[in-house]
Length: 91
Image (cartoon, rainbow, N blue to C red; front, top):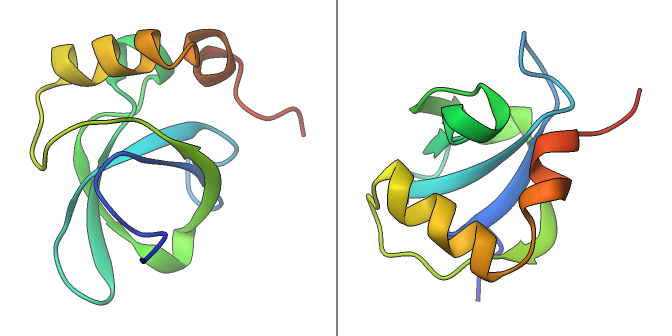
């Protein structure tokens, strides 16, 4: 099973969102995925992202592909990861 799947929590490693947590919402192809913060939690809007700019974590939330931000927030709350997602990484 691949670590790159819908629901995988990742850390952005490049760009203006570096060191913030995000959730993979859809695998587009071998190089790109769609991610979201969701914006209400981490300020990351839903967008396409190169896998090179993501570091997968061991955390996984149960969502379906292309889940809405509200569904993702509920899954994050259920997994008790809300505080972790809001805090991000300390650089």
